[in-house]
Image (tube, rainbow, N blue to C red; front, side, top):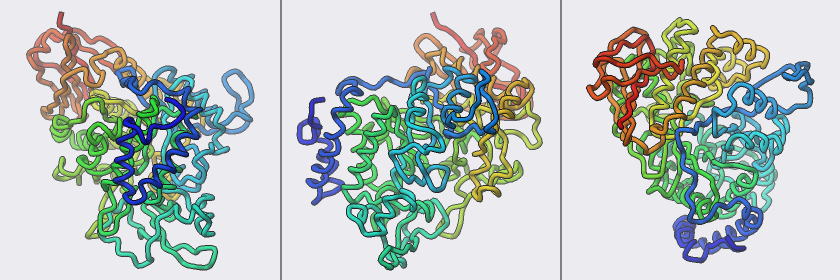
Length: 591
Protein backbone atom coordinates (compact mmCIF):
# COMPACT_ATOMS: atom_id res chain seq x y z
CA UNK A 1 0.00 0.00 0.00
CA UNK A 2 2.90 2.31 0.65
CA UNK A 3 2.75 5.55 2.57
CA UNK A 4 0.80 7.60 0.08
CA UNK A 5 -2.61 6.94 -1.39
CA UNK A 6 -2.36 6.65 -5.18
CA UNK A 7 -4.51 9.64 -6.10
CA UNK A 8 -2.13 10.87 -8.78
CA UNK A 9 -0.85 7.58 -10.17
CA UNK A 10 -2.27 5.20 -12.75
CA UNK A 11 -3.95 3.37 -9.86
CA UNK A 12 -5.74 6.56 -8.93
CA UNK A 13 -6.74 7.58 -12.45
CA UNK A 14 -10.38 6.66 -11.94
CA UNK A 15 -10.50 8.58 -8.69
CA UNK A 16 -9.10 11.65 -10.41
CA UNK A 17 -11.73 11.39 -13.12
CA UNK A 18 -14.52 11.04 -10.59
CA UNK A 19 -13.41 14.06 -8.58
CA UNK A 20 -13.11 16.13 -11.73
CA UNK A 21 -16.64 15.12 -12.74
CA UNK A 22 -18.12 15.81 -9.29
CA UNK A 23 -16.32 19.05 -8.43
CA UNK A 24 -15.16 20.41 -11.79
CA UNK A 25 -13.28 23.65 -11.02
CA UNK A 26 -12.74 22.59 -7.42
CA UNK A 27 -11.38 19.15 -8.29
CA UNK A 28 -7.79 19.97 -7.28
CA UNK A 29 -9.02 21.26 -3.94
CA UNK A 30 -10.99 18.04 -3.44
CA UNK A 31 -7.96 15.90 -4.34
CA UNK A 32 -5.77 17.72 -1.87
CA UNK A 33 -8.27 17.42 0.97
CA UNK A 34 -8.89 13.72 0.28
CA UNK A 35 -5.16 13.04 0.07
CA UNK A 36 -4.65 14.50 3.54
CA UNK A 37 -7.57 12.54 5.00
CA UNK A 38 -6.65 9.20 3.45
CA UNK A 39 -2.93 9.42 4.08
CA UNK A 40 -3.60 10.14 7.75
CA UNK A 41 -5.41 6.78 8.00
CA UNK A 42 -3.04 4.68 5.88
CA UNK A 43 -0.59 3.62 8.62
CA UNK A 44 -3.45 2.10 10.64
CA UNK A 45 -5.13 0.66 7.56
CA UNK A 46 -1.97 -1.23 6.54
CA UNK A 47 -2.87 -4.09 8.87
CA UNK A 48 -6.34 -4.43 7.30
CA UNK A 49 -5.35 -4.64 3.65
CA UNK A 50 -5.73 -7.82 1.67
CA UNK A 51 -3.96 -6.78 -1.50
CA UNK A 52 -4.76 -4.50 -4.39
CA UNK A 53 -5.48 -7.34 -6.75
CA UNK A 54 -6.85 -9.99 -4.39
CA UNK A 55 -10.63 -10.32 -4.85
CA UNK A 56 -12.92 -10.02 -1.87
CA UNK A 57 -14.12 -13.30 -0.41
CA UNK A 58 -17.14 -14.28 -2.45
CA UNK A 59 -20.55 -14.55 -0.83
CA UNK A 60 -21.60 -18.20 -0.68
CA UNK A 61 -24.52 -20.33 0.47
CA UNK A 62 -22.92 -20.34 3.92
CA UNK A 63 -23.56 -16.61 4.31
CA UNK A 64 -26.62 -14.96 5.81
CA UNK A 65 -27.17 -11.56 7.40
CA UNK A 66 -29.07 -10.73 10.59
CA UNK A 67 -30.64 -7.27 10.95
CA UNK A 68 -31.03 -6.08 14.55
CA UNK A 69 -30.94 -3.09 16.85
CA UNK A 70 -28.15 -3.00 19.39
CA UNK A 71 -30.69 -2.80 22.21
CA UNK A 72 -33.17 -5.24 20.72
CA UNK A 73 -33.33 -7.17 24.01
CA UNK A 74 -34.81 -5.25 26.93
CA UNK A 75 -34.47 -6.44 30.49
CA UNK A 76 -35.35 -5.51 34.03
CA UNK A 77 -32.22 -4.52 36.00
CA UNK A 78 -32.72 -7.16 38.70
CA UNK A 79 -32.39 -10.06 36.26
CA UNK A 80 -29.45 -12.46 36.17
CA UNK A 81 -27.73 -14.13 33.26
CA UNK A 82 -27.64 -17.86 32.57
CA UNK A 83 -24.76 -18.33 35.02
CA UNK A 84 -26.64 -16.57 37.83
CA UNK A 85 -24.54 -13.40 37.71
CA UNK A 86 -26.36 -10.06 37.98
CA UNK A 87 -26.98 -8.42 34.65
CA UNK A 88 -26.47 -4.95 36.13
CA UNK A 89 -23.53 -3.31 34.43
CA UNK A 90 -23.71 -5.37 31.25
CA UNK A 91 -24.32 -3.26 28.16
CA UNK A 92 -27.26 -3.67 25.81
CA UNK A 93 -24.88 -4.81 23.07
CA UNK A 94 -23.33 -7.37 25.42
CA UNK A 95 -26.77 -8.71 26.33
CA UNK A 96 -27.67 -8.98 22.65
CA UNK A 97 -24.43 -10.83 21.93
CA UNK A 98 -25.07 -13.27 24.77
CA UNK A 99 -28.65 -13.90 23.60
CA UNK A 100 -27.57 -14.54 20.01
CA UNK A 101 -24.78 -16.86 21.11
CA UNK A 102 -27.29 -18.92 23.10
CA UNK A 103 -30.00 -19.17 20.47
CA UNK A 104 -28.44 -18.86 17.01
CA UNK A 105 -24.75 -19.77 17.27
CA UNK A 106 -23.12 -19.80 13.84
CA UNK A 107 -26.38 -19.21 11.98
CA UNK A 108 -25.45 -15.79 10.55
CA UNK A 109 -22.09 -14.81 9.08
CA UNK A 110 -23.01 -11.09 8.97
CA UNK A 111 -24.72 -8.94 11.57
CA UNK A 112 -26.16 -5.54 10.69
CA UNK A 113 -26.38 -3.59 13.93
CA UNK A 114 -28.72 -0.74 13.11
CA UNK A 115 -27.29 2.72 13.92
CA UNK A 116 -25.58 2.47 17.28
CA UNK A 117 -24.35 6.07 17.36
CA UNK A 118 -25.74 8.81 19.61
CA UNK A 119 -28.94 10.04 17.96
CA UNK A 120 -31.88 12.38 18.46
CA UNK A 121 -34.72 10.63 16.56
CA UNK A 122 -35.70 7.95 13.99
CA UNK A 123 -34.33 5.09 16.11
CA UNK A 124 -30.75 5.98 15.27
CA UNK A 125 -30.92 7.45 11.77
CA UNK A 126 -30.67 11.04 13.02
CA UNK A 127 -27.00 10.82 13.97
CA UNK A 128 -25.48 13.26 16.44
CA UNK A 129 -21.92 11.89 16.41
CA UNK A 130 -20.71 9.41 13.80
CA UNK A 131 -17.59 8.34 15.67
CA UNK A 132 -19.14 7.38 18.99
CA UNK A 133 -21.15 4.43 20.25
CA UNK A 134 -24.28 5.51 22.07
CA UNK A 135 -23.38 4.95 25.75
CA UNK A 136 -26.92 3.67 26.28
CA UNK A 137 -25.92 0.70 24.09
CA UNK A 138 -22.32 0.18 25.17
CA UNK A 139 -18.88 0.86 23.74
CA UNK A 140 -16.62 0.16 20.79
CA UNK A 141 -15.33 -2.83 22.78
CA UNK A 142 -18.85 -4.31 22.74
CA UNK A 143 -19.06 -3.76 18.97
CA UNK A 144 -15.72 -5.50 18.59
CA UNK A 145 -16.90 -8.49 20.62
CA UNK A 146 -19.93 -8.87 18.35
CA UNK A 147 -17.54 -8.85 15.41
CA UNK A 148 -15.48 -11.74 16.73
CA UNK A 149 -18.06 -14.29 15.55
CA UNK A 150 -19.81 -12.38 12.77
CA UNK A 151 -18.83 -9.86 10.12
CA UNK A 152 -20.03 -6.41 11.11
CA UNK A 153 -22.31 -4.28 8.94
CA UNK A 154 -22.30 -0.58 9.85
CA UNK A 155 -24.84 2.02 8.80
CA UNK A 156 -23.21 4.83 6.85
CA UNK A 157 -25.87 7.50 7.35
CA UNK A 158 -24.52 9.72 4.63
CA UNK A 159 -27.48 11.84 3.43
CA UNK A 160 -28.25 13.78 6.59
CA UNK A 161 -27.24 14.51 10.18
CA UNK A 162 -29.14 15.39 13.32
CA UNK A 163 -30.40 18.91 13.91
CA UNK A 164 -29.06 18.39 17.44
CA UNK A 165 -25.53 17.46 16.36
CA UNK A 166 -22.48 19.54 17.17
CA UNK A 167 -22.04 20.00 13.40
CA UNK A 168 -25.42 21.71 13.13
CA UNK A 169 -24.81 23.75 16.28
CA UNK A 170 -21.62 25.05 14.66
CA UNK A 171 -23.52 25.64 11.41
CA UNK A 172 -26.03 27.85 13.22
CA UNK A 173 -23.16 29.78 14.79
CA UNK A 174 -21.65 30.33 11.35
CA UNK A 175 -18.42 28.58 12.34
CA UNK A 176 -16.03 27.40 9.64
CA UNK A 177 -16.04 24.75 8.13
CA UNK A 178 -19.48 23.68 9.39
CA UNK A 179 -21.12 26.77 7.91
CA UNK A 180 -20.79 24.87 4.59
CA UNK A 181 -21.92 21.45 5.80
CA UNK A 182 -25.68 21.64 5.22
CA UNK A 183 -27.94 22.34 2.25
CA UNK A 184 -29.80 25.66 2.36
CA UNK A 185 -32.50 27.10 0.12
CA UNK A 186 -34.90 30.08 0.31
CA UNK A 187 -37.98 29.48 2.45
CA UNK A 188 -40.15 29.90 -0.66
CA UNK A 189 -38.03 27.50 -2.75
CA UNK A 190 -40.03 25.72 -5.46
CA UNK A 191 -39.39 22.01 -4.89
CA UNK A 192 -42.24 20.72 -7.03
CA UNK A 193 -39.78 18.80 -9.24
CA UNK A 194 -38.07 17.07 -6.29
CA UNK A 195 -38.83 13.39 -5.63
CA UNK A 196 -40.32 13.26 -2.14
CA UNK A 197 -40.30 10.15 0.09
CA UNK A 198 -42.28 11.99 2.79
CA UNK A 199 -45.23 14.39 3.01
CA UNK A 200 -43.78 17.17 5.21
CA UNK A 201 -42.41 20.38 3.60
CA UNK A 202 -38.95 19.88 2.11
CA UNK A 203 -37.55 23.20 3.39
CA UNK A 204 -37.53 23.71 7.16
CA UNK A 205 -37.17 27.14 8.74
CA UNK A 206 -34.43 27.46 11.37
CA UNK A 207 -33.07 30.39 13.33
CA UNK A 208 -29.36 31.06 13.24
CA UNK A 209 -27.56 32.23 16.38
CA UNK A 210 -27.31 35.72 14.91
CA UNK A 211 -31.11 35.89 14.64
CA UNK A 212 -31.27 35.29 10.89
CA UNK A 213 -33.98 32.91 9.63
CA UNK A 214 -32.75 30.33 7.14
CA UNK A 215 -34.26 27.47 5.14
CA UNK A 216 -32.54 24.07 5.34
CA UNK A 217 -33.20 20.99 3.21
CA UNK A 218 -34.88 18.18 5.16
CA UNK A 219 -35.67 15.14 2.99
CA UNK A 220 -36.83 12.88 5.82
CA UNK A 221 -37.75 15.00 8.86
CA UNK A 222 -37.19 18.37 10.47
CA UNK A 223 -34.63 16.70 12.75
CA UNK A 224 -32.59 15.32 9.82
CA UNK A 225 -30.75 18.05 7.92
CA UNK A 226 -29.37 17.10 4.51
CA UNK A 227 -25.61 17.37 4.12
CA UNK A 228 -24.01 19.46 1.42
CA UNK A 229 -21.85 17.15 -0.68
CA UNK A 230 -21.17 19.89 -3.19
CA UNK A 231 -18.56 20.91 -0.58
CA UNK A 232 -15.40 18.76 -0.86
CA UNK A 233 -14.91 19.09 2.90
CA UNK A 234 -18.14 17.17 3.51
CA UNK A 235 -17.07 14.35 1.21
CA UNK A 236 -13.67 14.24 2.92
CA UNK A 237 -15.32 14.07 6.34
CA UNK A 238 -17.35 11.05 5.31
CA UNK A 239 -14.42 9.31 3.67
CA UNK A 240 -12.61 9.69 6.98
CA UNK A 241 -15.64 8.30 8.85
CA UNK A 242 -15.76 5.35 6.45
CA UNK A 243 -12.09 4.54 7.04
CA UNK A 244 -12.60 4.97 10.79
CA UNK A 245 -15.40 2.39 10.60
CA UNK A 246 -13.07 0.05 8.71
CA UNK A 247 -10.58 0.33 11.57
CA UNK A 248 -13.40 -0.47 14.00
CA UNK A 249 -14.11 -3.75 12.25
CA UNK A 250 -16.80 -2.96 9.65
CA UNK A 251 -16.91 -5.47 6.80
CA UNK A 252 -19.87 -3.91 5.02
CA UNK A 253 -21.14 -0.33 4.76
CA UNK A 254 -24.85 0.24 4.30
CA UNK A 255 -25.22 3.52 2.38
CA UNK A 256 -28.44 4.82 3.90
CA UNK A 257 -30.79 6.86 1.67
CA UNK A 258 -27.97 7.34 -0.83
CA UNK A 259 -30.37 8.11 -3.71
CA UNK A 260 -31.06 11.64 -2.41
CA UNK A 261 -27.45 12.66 -1.79
CA UNK A 262 -26.90 15.31 -4.48
CA UNK A 263 -29.07 18.38 -4.97
CA UNK A 264 -29.48 20.22 -8.27
CA UNK A 265 -32.19 22.81 -8.77
CA UNK A 266 -34.80 21.96 -11.40
CA UNK A 267 -34.25 18.20 -11.12
CA UNK A 268 -35.77 15.40 -9.05
CA UNK A 269 -32.63 15.47 -6.86
CA UNK A 270 -32.69 11.67 -6.89
CA UNK A 271 -30.27 9.28 -8.61
CA UNK A 272 -28.31 12.16 -10.08
CA UNK A 273 -25.05 11.38 -11.92
CA UNK A 274 -23.07 13.03 -9.10
CA UNK A 275 -24.68 10.68 -6.59
CA UNK A 276 -23.62 7.66 -8.63
CA UNK A 277 -20.15 9.19 -8.96
CA UNK A 278 -19.86 9.48 -5.16
CA UNK A 279 -20.76 5.79 -4.80
CA UNK A 280 -18.13 4.93 -7.43
CA UNK A 281 -15.61 7.06 -5.58
CA UNK A 282 -16.24 5.27 -2.28
CA UNK A 283 -15.96 1.92 -4.07
CA UNK A 284 -12.70 3.00 -5.70
CA UNK A 285 -11.20 4.07 -2.37
CA UNK A 286 -12.17 0.82 -0.67
CA UNK A 287 -10.86 -1.28 -3.56
CA UNK A 288 -7.67 0.71 -4.06
CA UNK A 289 -6.83 0.43 -0.38
CA UNK A 290 -7.21 -3.33 -0.63
CA UNK A 291 -9.89 -3.49 2.07
CA UNK A 292 -12.08 -6.57 2.38
CA UNK A 293 -15.19 -4.41 2.68
CA UNK A 294 -18.45 -4.46 0.73
CA UNK A 295 -20.69 -1.51 -0.15
CA UNK A 296 -24.45 -2.01 0.16
CA UNK A 297 -26.82 0.64 -1.21
CA UNK A 298 -30.23 1.29 0.34
CA UNK A 299 -32.55 2.84 -2.26
CA UNK A 300 -36.24 2.15 -1.68
CA UNK A 301 -37.26 3.20 -5.19
CA UNK A 302 -38.60 1.62 -8.40
CA UNK A 303 -36.68 -1.46 -9.50
CA UNK A 304 -34.83 0.05 -12.47
CA UNK A 305 -33.51 2.93 -10.37
CA UNK A 306 -32.64 0.58 -7.52
CA UNK A 307 -30.42 -1.78 -9.51
CA UNK A 308 -28.78 1.17 -11.28
CA UNK A 309 -26.58 1.41 -8.19
CA UNK A 310 -24.61 -1.58 -9.41
CA UNK A 311 -23.35 0.77 -12.12
CA UNK A 312 -21.15 -1.20 -14.49
CA UNK A 313 -20.00 -3.39 -11.60
CA UNK A 314 -18.16 -0.33 -10.29
CA UNK A 315 -20.62 1.01 -7.70
CA UNK A 316 -22.28 -1.10 -5.01
CA UNK A 317 -21.13 -4.66 -4.42
CA UNK A 318 -24.60 -5.42 -3.02
CA UNK A 319 -28.01 -3.80 -3.57
CA UNK A 320 -31.14 -4.28 -1.49
CA UNK A 321 -33.69 -6.32 -3.43
CA UNK A 322 -36.52 -3.87 -2.72
CA UNK A 323 -38.98 -5.34 -5.20
CA UNK A 324 -38.87 -8.76 -3.56
CA UNK A 325 -40.80 -8.00 -0.32
CA UNK A 326 -43.89 -6.36 -1.89
CA UNK A 327 -44.08 -9.02 -4.61
CA UNK A 328 -43.80 -11.89 -2.12
CA UNK A 329 -46.42 -10.20 0.04
CA UNK A 330 -48.71 -9.91 -3.00
CA UNK A 331 -48.20 -13.62 -3.68
CA UNK A 332 -49.32 -14.59 -0.17
CA UNK A 333 -52.16 -12.10 0.28
CA UNK A 334 -53.71 -12.93 -3.11
CA UNK A 335 -52.37 -16.52 -3.44
CA UNK A 336 -51.02 -15.45 -6.84
CA UNK A 337 -47.23 -15.73 -7.28
CA UNK A 338 -47.32 -15.13 -11.05
CA UNK A 339 -46.13 -11.48 -10.90
CA UNK A 340 -43.35 -12.51 -8.54
CA UNK A 341 -42.17 -15.27 -10.87
CA UNK A 342 -42.32 -13.01 -13.94
CA UNK A 343 -40.25 -10.33 -12.20
CA UNK A 344 -37.72 -12.85 -10.85
CA UNK A 345 -37.14 -14.26 -14.33
CA UNK A 346 -36.16 -10.87 -15.75
CA UNK A 347 -33.91 -9.90 -12.84
CA UNK A 348 -30.37 -9.31 -14.08
CA UNK A 349 -27.35 -8.25 -12.04
CA UNK A 350 -23.74 -7.68 -13.16
CA UNK A 351 -21.13 -10.38 -12.68
CA UNK A 352 -19.62 -10.37 -9.18
CA UNK A 353 -22.52 -8.25 -7.88
CA UNK A 354 -25.34 -9.63 -5.77
CA UNK A 355 -28.73 -8.76 -4.33
CA UNK A 356 -29.52 -8.58 -0.62
CA UNK A 357 -32.64 -10.75 -0.49
CA UNK A 358 -34.76 -9.60 2.44
CA UNK A 359 -38.48 -9.54 3.19
CA UNK A 360 -38.71 -7.51 6.39
CA UNK A 361 -36.48 -4.98 8.08
CA UNK A 362 -36.61 -2.22 10.67
CA UNK A 363 -38.44 -0.15 8.04
CA UNK A 364 -41.75 -1.04 6.44
CA UNK A 365 -42.46 -2.79 3.15
CA UNK A 366 -41.92 -0.41 0.24
CA UNK A 367 -44.78 0.04 -2.22
CA UNK A 368 -42.86 2.04 -4.84
CA UNK A 369 -40.58 -0.87 -5.91
CA UNK A 370 -43.58 -2.91 -7.08
CA UNK A 371 -44.48 -0.37 -9.76
CA UNK A 372 -44.72 -1.93 -13.20
CA UNK A 373 -44.98 -5.50 -11.90
CA UNK A 374 -48.49 -5.62 -10.40
CA UNK A 375 -51.45 -3.89 -12.06
CA UNK A 376 -53.47 -3.47 -8.87
CA UNK A 377 -51.81 -3.52 -5.45
CA UNK A 378 -55.06 -2.54 -3.75
CA UNK A 379 -55.78 -6.04 -2.36
CA UNK A 380 -52.49 -5.94 -0.47
CA UNK A 381 -53.17 -2.48 0.96
CA UNK A 382 -56.55 -3.64 2.17
CA UNK A 383 -55.09 -6.89 3.45
CA UNK A 384 -52.46 -5.05 5.49
CA UNK A 385 -55.09 -2.81 7.08
CA UNK A 386 -57.28 -5.83 7.86
CA UNK A 387 -54.33 -7.47 9.61
CA UNK A 388 -53.78 -4.49 11.88
CA UNK A 389 -51.07 -2.83 9.79
CA UNK A 390 -50.65 0.81 8.83
CA UNK A 391 -49.93 2.58 5.55
CA UNK A 392 -47.43 5.43 5.42
CA UNK A 393 -47.73 8.03 2.69
CA UNK A 394 -45.41 10.16 0.60
CA UNK A 395 -46.03 13.30 -1.41
CA UNK A 396 -47.20 12.74 -4.97
CA UNK A 397 -48.09 15.15 -7.76
CA UNK A 398 -51.79 14.76 -6.98
CA UNK A 399 -51.47 14.48 -3.21
CA UNK A 400 -50.29 11.82 -0.73
CA UNK A 401 -49.85 8.30 -2.09
CA UNK A 402 -48.95 4.99 -0.35
CA UNK A 403 -45.22 4.66 0.19
CA UNK A 404 -44.70 2.00 2.82
CA UNK A 405 -46.64 -0.74 4.64
CA UNK A 406 -46.00 -0.94 8.36
CA UNK A 407 -46.75 -4.38 9.78
CA UNK A 408 -44.85 -7.36 11.16
CA UNK A 409 -44.00 -9.83 8.42
CA UNK A 410 -45.52 -12.75 10.36
CA UNK A 411 -48.87 -10.95 10.43
CA UNK A 412 -48.57 -9.66 6.87
CA UNK A 413 -48.22 -13.01 5.08
CA UNK A 414 -50.60 -15.08 7.22
CA UNK A 415 -54.37 -15.36 6.72
CA UNK A 416 -56.70 -13.29 8.88
CA UNK A 417 -57.18 -14.78 12.35
CA UNK A 418 -54.46 -17.35 11.66
CA UNK A 419 -53.27 -19.70 14.37
CA UNK A 420 -49.66 -19.63 15.54
CA UNK A 421 -48.97 -22.73 13.47
CA UNK A 422 -50.42 -21.12 10.33
CA UNK A 423 -48.45 -17.92 10.92
CA UNK A 424 -45.22 -19.85 11.35
CA UNK A 425 -45.86 -21.89 8.21
CA UNK A 426 -46.61 -18.80 6.08
CA UNK A 427 -43.65 -16.91 7.54
CA UNK A 428 -41.20 -19.70 6.74
CA UNK A 429 -42.68 -20.48 3.32
CA UNK A 430 -42.30 -16.84 2.30
CA UNK A 431 -38.66 -16.83 3.37
CA UNK A 432 -38.22 -20.03 1.40
CA UNK A 433 -38.70 -17.82 -1.67
CA UNK A 434 -36.14 -15.26 -0.50
CA UNK A 435 -33.61 -18.02 0.15
CA UNK A 436 -34.24 -19.51 -3.30
CA UNK A 437 -33.02 -16.32 -4.97
CA UNK A 438 -29.41 -15.73 -5.97
CA UNK A 439 -27.71 -13.44 -3.48
CA UNK A 440 -27.19 -12.86 0.23
CA UNK A 441 -30.26 -13.64 2.38
CA UNK A 442 -31.08 -11.22 5.20
CA UNK A 443 -33.46 -11.81 8.10
CA UNK A 444 -34.77 -9.19 10.53
CA UNK A 445 -34.68 -10.09 14.23
CA UNK A 446 -38.48 -9.86 14.51
CA UNK A 447 -38.99 -12.26 11.60
CA UNK A 448 -36.45 -14.70 12.98
CA UNK A 449 -38.22 -14.79 16.32
CA UNK A 450 -41.78 -14.71 14.98
CA UNK A 451 -42.82 -11.32 16.35
CA UNK A 452 -46.33 -10.08 15.73
CA UNK A 453 -47.58 -6.49 15.45
CA UNK A 454 -46.73 -4.25 18.36
CA UNK A 455 -50.12 -2.59 18.11
CA UNK A 456 -49.43 -0.10 20.89
CA UNK A 457 -46.10 0.99 19.46
CA UNK A 458 -47.21 3.66 16.97
CA UNK A 459 -49.32 5.34 19.65
CA UNK A 460 -46.51 5.26 22.19
CA UNK A 461 -43.70 6.40 19.88
CA UNK A 462 -45.79 8.47 17.45
CA UNK A 463 -44.61 6.89 14.21
CA UNK A 464 -45.94 3.99 12.13
CA UNK A 465 -42.70 2.02 11.91
CA UNK A 466 -42.83 1.38 15.65
CA UNK A 467 -45.32 -1.43 14.94
CA UNK A 468 -42.35 -3.61 13.92
CA UNK A 469 -39.69 -2.19 16.25
CA UNK A 470 -40.64 -3.45 19.68
CA UNK A 471 -37.77 -4.26 22.05
CA UNK A 472 -39.04 -7.51 23.65
CA UNK A 473 -38.29 -8.19 27.30
CA UNK A 474 -35.82 -11.03 27.77
CA UNK A 475 -37.73 -13.18 30.26
CA UNK A 476 -40.88 -13.18 28.13
CA UNK A 477 -38.87 -13.91 24.99
CA UNK A 478 -37.02 -16.79 26.64
CA UNK A 479 -40.26 -18.18 28.05
CA UNK A 480 -41.88 -18.21 24.60
CA UNK A 481 -38.85 -19.90 23.06
CA UNK A 482 -39.09 -22.71 25.63
CA UNK A 483 -42.65 -23.47 24.49
CA UNK A 484 -42.39 -25.56 21.29
CA UNK A 485 -45.96 -24.63 20.32
CA UNK A 486 -45.40 -20.86 20.46
CA UNK A 487 -45.05 -18.81 17.28
CA UNK A 488 -41.63 -17.61 18.41
CA UNK A 489 -40.37 -21.13 19.00
CA UNK A 490 -41.74 -22.51 15.72
CA UNK A 491 -40.33 -19.57 13.76
CA UNK A 492 -36.83 -19.88 15.24
CA UNK A 493 -36.74 -23.67 14.84
CA UNK A 494 -37.83 -23.40 11.21
CA UNK A 495 -35.38 -20.61 10.36
CA UNK A 496 -32.56 -22.51 12.04
CA UNK A 497 -33.19 -25.60 9.93
CA UNK A 498 -33.83 -23.63 6.75
CA UNK A 499 -30.63 -21.58 6.97
CA UNK A 500 -28.50 -24.55 8.01
CA UNK A 501 -29.79 -26.75 5.21
CA UNK A 502 -29.26 -24.00 2.66
CA UNK A 503 -25.69 -23.49 3.86
CA UNK A 504 -24.92 -27.17 3.26
CA UNK A 505 -25.76 -26.97 -0.46
CA UNK A 506 -23.39 -25.06 -2.70
CA UNK A 507 -26.08 -25.08 -5.39
CA UNK A 508 -27.24 -21.93 -3.54
CA UNK A 509 -23.93 -20.13 -4.08
CA UNK A 510 -24.60 -16.96 -6.10
CA UNK A 511 -23.83 -17.65 -9.74
CA UNK A 512 -23.48 -21.38 -9.14
CA UNK A 513 -26.65 -22.40 -10.94
CA UNK A 514 -28.86 -21.42 -13.83
CA UNK A 515 -32.05 -20.23 -12.16
CA UNK A 516 -35.53 -19.95 -13.59
CA UNK A 517 -38.88 -19.25 -11.97
CA UNK A 518 -42.51 -19.85 -12.80
CA UNK A 519 -45.90 -20.07 -11.15
CA UNK A 520 -48.80 -22.45 -11.57
CA UNK A 521 -51.89 -21.36 -9.70
CA UNK A 522 -50.79 -20.65 -6.14
CA UNK A 523 -47.53 -22.58 -6.41
CA UNK A 524 -44.23 -20.75 -6.87
CA UNK A 525 -41.39 -22.70 -8.50
CA UNK A 526 -37.66 -21.90 -8.44
CA UNK A 527 -35.45 -24.24 -10.45
CA UNK A 528 -31.71 -24.11 -9.71
CA UNK A 529 -29.69 -26.21 -12.14
CA UNK A 530 -25.98 -26.74 -11.52
CA UNK A 531 -23.33 -28.88 -13.17
CA UNK A 532 -24.04 -31.97 -11.11
CA UNK A 533 -26.91 -31.01 -8.85
CA UNK A 534 -30.46 -29.82 -9.46
CA UNK A 535 -32.93 -28.47 -6.94
CA UNK A 536 -36.53 -27.42 -7.46
CA UNK A 537 -37.99 -25.22 -4.72
CA UNK A 538 -41.77 -25.45 -4.34
CA UNK A 539 -43.78 -22.97 -2.28
CA UNK A 540 -47.52 -23.12 -1.74
CA UNK A 541 -48.48 -19.46 -1.35
CA UNK A 542 -52.00 -20.30 -0.17
CA UNK A 543 -53.67 -21.71 2.94
CA UNK A 544 -55.22 -24.53 0.92
CA UNK A 545 -53.78 -27.98 0.12
CA UNK A 546 -52.74 -28.21 -3.53
CA UNK A 547 -51.35 -30.60 -6.09
CA UNK A 548 -48.34 -29.36 -8.02
CA UNK A 549 -47.20 -30.53 -11.44
CA UNK A 550 -43.50 -31.42 -11.45
CA UNK A 551 -41.20 -31.33 -14.52
CA UNK A 552 -40.26 -34.72 -15.90
CA UNK A 553 -36.56 -34.31 -15.04
CA UNK A 554 -37.41 -34.22 -11.33
CA UNK A 555 -39.13 -37.60 -11.34
CA UNK A 556 -37.40 -39.94 -8.87
CA UNK A 557 -35.87 -37.00 -7.02
CA UNK A 558 -35.69 -36.85 -3.23
CA UNK A 559 -38.32 -34.74 -1.48
CA UNK A 560 -36.89 -32.70 1.39
CA UNK A 561 -38.59 -30.42 3.89
CA UNK A 562 -35.98 -27.78 4.86
CA UNK A 563 -38.18 -26.34 7.64
CA UNK A 564 -38.25 -29.64 9.55
CA UNK A 565 -34.92 -30.81 8.03
CA UNK A 566 -36.54 -34.14 7.14
CA UNK A 567 -36.44 -36.29 4.03
CA UNK A 568 -40.02 -36.98 2.94
CA UNK A 569 -39.29 -39.75 0.44
CA UNK A 570 -38.74 -40.16 -3.29
CA UNK A 571 -41.02 -38.58 -5.89
CA UNK A 572 -42.53 -41.43 -7.89
CA UNK A 573 -44.45 -39.46 -10.51
CA UNK A 574 -44.91 -35.90 -11.71
CA UNK A 575 -47.56 -34.84 -9.20
CA UNK A 576 -46.90 -33.88 -5.59
CA UNK A 577 -49.30 -32.86 -2.87
CA UNK A 578 -48.52 -29.65 -1.01
CA UNK A 579 -49.94 -28.79 2.39
CA UNK A 580 -51.02 -25.18 3.03
CA UNK A 581 -47.95 -22.92 3.01
CA UNK A 582 -45.72 -25.88 2.26
CA UNK A 583 -42.04 -25.40 1.39
CA UNK A 584 -40.32 -28.37 -0.25
CA UNK A 585 -37.05 -28.99 -2.07
CA UNK A 586 -36.87 -31.63 -4.80
CA UNK A 587 -33.23 -32.63 -5.16
CA UNK A 588 -31.39 -34.64 -7.77
CA UNK A 589 -27.72 -35.42 -8.30
CA UNK A 590 -26.33 -36.12 -11.76
CA UNK A 591 -23.43 -38.56 -11.75
